[in-house]
Amino acid sequence: MHHRPVYRPGLRRRLGNAVNVASALAGSGIVNPGRPVRFFRQFAALHSWGTTLAGEFTSAAARDPYRTALVDDRGDLTYAEVADRTTRLAGALRLDSPRPRIAVLCRNHRGLVETLIAGSKRGADIILLNTGYGAGQLRDVLTELRVDLMVSDVEFADIVYKAPQSAQRAVVWADAPGGTGPELEDVIADAVPCKLRPPRVQGRMIMLSSGTTGRPKGARRRPRPGLRPLASMLSRIPLRAHDTMVIDAPIFHTWGFAAMQMGFAMRGTLVLHRRFAAEQTLRAIARHRKVDLFAAPVMVQRIMDLPPEELAGYDTSALRVVAVSGSALPGDLATRFMDQFGDKLYNIYGSTEASWVSIATPRDLRTHPGTAGRPPRGTKLAILNERGEPVPTGVRGHIYAGNELIFEGYTSGAPSDMRDGLLGTGDLGHVDRSGLLYVDGRIDDLIVSGGENIFPREVEDALARLPEVMEVAVIGVADAEFGQRLAAYIVPRPGSQIDAEQVRRYIRERVARYAVPRDVNFITRLPRNATGKVVGRWLTQQAAAAGDAAADDARVPEGQVAF
Image (cartoon, rainbow, N blue to C red; front, top):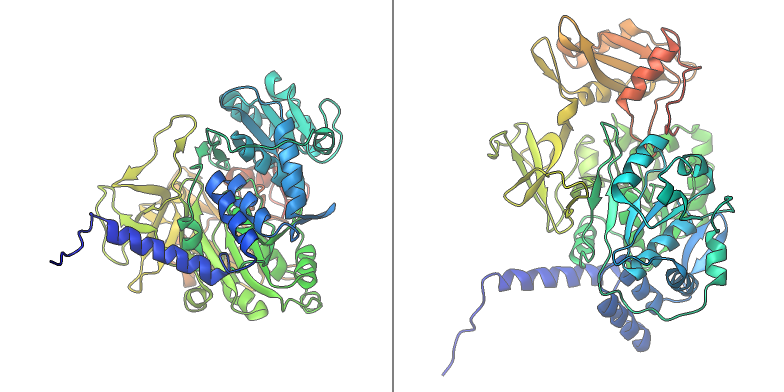
């Protein structure tokens, strides 16, 4: 007697997801056949350690121990060397509490990466601090989160010494001797070799918001995300195992950290630069084979700002993928970049809390340069009104998203904006008839001027297309008559001629009369934080310091980083 198989609810869906994950991993070369012993060691390590950062790295080191893992200013390290160094470091770290916490204040280099892996091997919570924080922001974060150990670059010694006393007494300097406290290299060299077992309790990565609109908030990441998020990313971006991955996005930021995770999962070679410089990035691309670049949009813009003869002087034929995230692509930057380097640009939209929400491929960006793309496999997207109801196609609403990488919650206990399992990103946007997402702007950025709703980004995109404009930022400022008005801050291209009336006339013709900026300020640079985002309150400080003239002598606000 034959019986039909009985499927439990959701079993078919789970089987389908497993097949999709396996297909994506096989297609990228992650699980391609190799030496049987190393193949077994790879998956034995992943099974033992799980899909934590330590697990991803240990698995890669078991499979490809002699492949170069890291390249930075100090040279190269293989997977085997990093595995040994991080095990030594993990064993030597003085972490006595049941749930230890390590705060890390470093730029992109081996000391940062090795601290993260070692901390993961010990099961510690790791707090990734923004290198653009001032002393006050750092003090607020460390007071709330109470760390057991701090690992910092020496350049930040001044603000570290203004941190709470408990943090000052437990500092390891990541890149050079720093006075009080040992240097990371000495800790590793003096450590006794040991064998570590996977921790019983997995630590969390705590990512911090940029603090551009207030006090930074800590977001706890899930400790074992599984392989589906990686497969989700691979469904839209053609990364390959053993690629060289130039990570210029700061690793303390969600996008840079994700790039590092994917790089180890792909058993790739990670090339790290302490500070971004366009020429340095092009040299790295020319030096390596099969290169993927992970960057912020402003970095791509800086590359395109180089003189044409300098761009032509580098062989970039090895460039396979350029993946950017962190802010919007301004104007026609996507099209200009692809005209120069080929159709290799991918734009990822997401947030610290939701990770990635959508990905725009080169094909999407060719036809719709302003789009944020489509959700990758496994991600749900909804555009809702203020009552939580879906809005029609093309209508602006609040962006909500859900996937397996949604954060666990804020360290402060602050509530998050959840609706039916989807998380609000804090942005407004719309979806067109073809299913492409457009991010219209932050909810906080929407200004009402004389009864008209205006998004500064629309004006920014229009002005960015002017040949005379190198960079532009538009914000809302208080106005006694209209409630708010637009203020434009423009960095002109060297040698160009542009005036305020030309700017206003252009916006009146291209956008709308009510979107014309009343204030037009010409400055020499835009004040950006360490992730490349323009900070509105710094713009007003810069303009005030410079008066009505160009802001050559404007005071650089605390924590500001120039790109």
